Amino acid sequence: MKNKSAFFDYKWVIVFISALMVFTVLGFCSSANGIYIAPITSALDISRGSYAVTTSVRYVTTSVINIFFGTLIYRFGAKKLIMSGFILLIISSIIYSVATTVPIFCVGSFFLGAGLSFTTTTMVGSVINKWCAQNKGTIMGVVLATNGLGATLARIILTPIINAGNPFDYRNAYRLVAVILAGVALVMLIFFRNTPKGEEEHRYEVKKGKHHASHDVHLFRMPYFYVALVCIFVTGLVLQSVSGIADPHFRDNNVAIATITTVMSVHSIVLSLSKFTTGFIYDKAGIRAASLICYLAAVFAMVSLVVVGNDNLGIFFGFVYAVLSSVALPLETIMLPIFARELFGDEIFNKSLGIFAAVNTAGYAVGGPIANLVFDITGSYDLWIFISIALIAAVCVTMNFVITAAKRTLAHLHDDEAVTAN
Image (cartoon, rainbow, N blue to C red; front, side, top):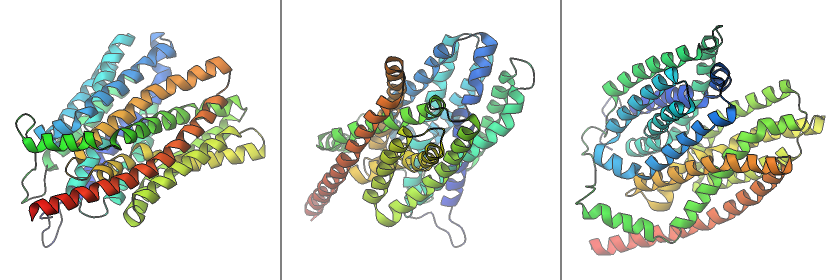
C-alpha cells in the first residue's frame, strides 16, 4: 500500500468516517425504524399489514441495485456512490415526513432501499478491502458494529420527539434525521478518498473493457457460484425471518414483557461484539472457522428458541437464544464481504459482493412473509423454526464444501496465471 506517510496513515481516516457512515445510516435510517410504525399507523389510520408493504419495497430495491454494485463502482467510484446514497436517504426522510398514504410511503422506501445499498455493508466491504491490506475482517467488524451504537443513540434522540404529544410529531423526527444525514454527508464529501494516495483507481470499462468481461465469465462459470448463491439466499431468508418472529414467539409462549425486553437488550449488546469477534476470528483462523462458528450458533440458537417458556428453564434458553443468535447474525453482514473475497478473489470482489448482498437481501424479503404464513396456517411459529433448523444445518454443511471447492479453483487459476506470465 502506498498510502502510508512517516507519521500517519490516511486509511484510519477512511475507517473512521466509514464507521461514522454506518453509525448514522444504519442507526438512524434502518435499525431504529421500528419506533415509527405505531405512531405512523395510528396517526394516519393505516393498518400495520398494509404499512408492512413498505419494508418489502425497501428490500427489493436494495436487492436489485446490489446486483449492479460491481458495475456501478467500477464506472463511478465509491465516493460518487456514497454521496448519491446520502442524497437518496435525505429524500427518503423528507418523503416520510410528508407522506399520508401507503403508496407515498412506498416511494420513500424505494429511496431508502437505494440509499442504503450505497452506504452500508456492501460499500463498507468494498472500501475496507481497498484501503486495508491487513486485518480486513477485524476492521470491517469494528466498522459494522457501530450500527448498534447508532441505533441506541437514534432511539434516545428520536423517541422523545415522536412522543412529544402530537400524533404527527414523528414527522419532526424524520426532518431531524434529514439534517443529521446532511451533516455526515458533508464530512464524507470533504474527507473521503476513493483510493490511497499514489495509487491509480483500478476501474474496469463497463462497455469496452475485455478484462471486465473475462472476469464475469470466470465468476459465472465457477461451478460452486450458484451453490453459494443458494446458500447465501437461504441464510438471509432463515436468519431474518427467525429474528423477526423471536419477539412474538416469546409472547406466544407467555414470557413476561419485562423479560423479553431484557433478553433483547442482551441480544443487541452481544450482536455489536460479535461483529468484531467474527472479523477477528477470520483474520486469525480463516474463513472456515469463522463461518462454521456462525452457522453452528444459528442452529443451536433456533433449537433454544423452540423450548423458550415462562419457567426458569424456558427463560434460560431465551437468553441462550439471545447470545447465540447474535453470534450467527454476522452471516448477514461482515461475512458477506469475506465470502466474496475468499470464494472469488480480489479481482471480481466488488461484483461478487454486490450479487451476494442482492440475494441475501432477497432472502430478507421472502423469509418474513413465509414465517408468518406458517403461523397463520398452524397457529404457531414452531414448524417454521424446525424447518429453519434443517435449512441452516444443510447450508452449514454445503458452505463447507463450497469453501473447499473455491480454494482448489482459485489455486488452479493462480497457477494458470503464473504459467501464462512465464
